[in-house]
Image (tube, rainbow, N blue to C red; front, top):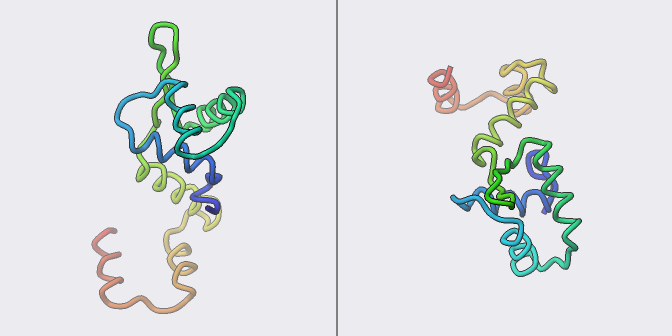
Length: 122
């Protein structure tokens, strides 16, 4: 799996777990998923490093339950993609939707149907 909206392949695999789970997960539950589903023989420190970095990046958040941490997504998959796209437009296209659309279409004209959809969005 290639880079997905700024996430590495491993981060995507972990985020898919969090995005598809409604309840916060314990470290053990995440480690079991990594071992059984992702077939990775990680040490606890490896998973802890990933989770820590993902928390710093704002991808996941933690809550303290008794003496354990529980992990959950900080946003939905759609929210993450929207934020990433907005940052892309801001950084790469001078925050101009017009410049973004022009780059996206390769300078070709939009169909009347596509243009109408854009008008409705605006």
